[in-house]
Amino acid sequence: MLFRNRMHAGQVLAEMLRGYCNREDVVVLALPRGGVPVAFEIASALHAPLDVFLVRKLGVPGQEELAMGAIATGGIRVLNNEVVRHLGIPDHVIDSATKAEQQELERRQQAYRGTRESPQVRGRIILFVDDGLATGSTMRAAVTALRQQKPARIVVAVPVAAASTCQEFQEEVDQIICAATPEPFYGVGQWYEDFSQTTDEEVRDLLDRAAQEYQRYRALKCAS
Image (cartoon, rainbow, N blue to C red; front, side):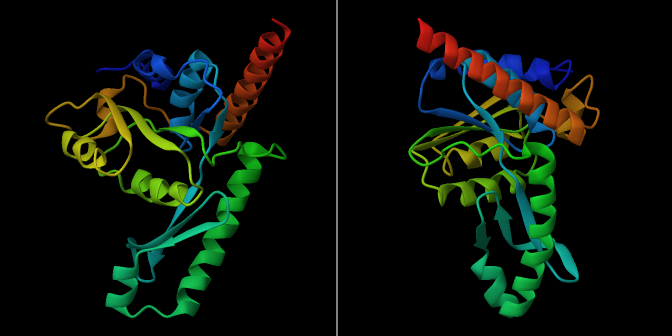
């Protein structure tokens, strides 16, 4: 085992990201649910705001494992035009899938964030965090969607990843930080002593705590 739990993994990553500490232009975004405990430790150590970035895959009807696109936080929809053209998927099918997934995305957004506004992404450095990357398909879709909000820089940071996936991301984002790339890889959960599921309640609690910590940091900084 490399990490005791997700928070330990976040502490390890935070040390690797020290160069982003105390910067006004840094935002930490996590893929829920498992990425949130990791990202909480990073945001806390770097004195940066924390939020979730929600992404839902749009599966091809009857072949749901095959993505024809994705929707994400901020009303963003990205289509895999190659899949759509090859399978001749009509617009009404795409719209139907989008509507169904949008409802689930909005449910999760309400559950996690409540009435709290999303942080500004445009022109910021985004530290994009998950608890690990196997194939990286979810993170890849999230990065594609995030780019439409025009951040200045996207840094993907994960505790553990398949070496091939980590290498692929070097060409897809501005920076990729993988704390460990063990071989053979097997799966993300193999490298945690405790890889128990993160609940919606834990996500909400960590986001609330992170917001309070950041507000205290800002108040102290302004007072000094």
